[in-house]
Amino acid sequence: QRQGATFVENWTDGTAFTDITRQQEMLQRAREELERERRNLLRRRPIYEVKEKP
Image (cartoon, rainbow, N blue to C red; front, side, top):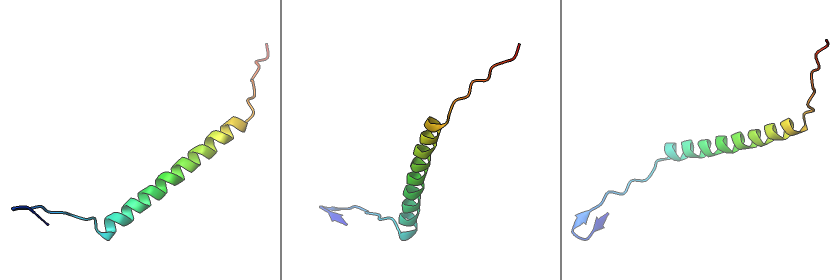
């Protein structure tokens, strides 16, 4: 692309890079959802106290 008296290279990502980026975003969303579910399960889990017998 020409800007004034100089040329500037403009690179765009190919399909492989856009596919990888899309997969990374999907994985990140899945991780976040799993983490939310894990936290919810930990909140619901009953806490049992272990008492030692003398």
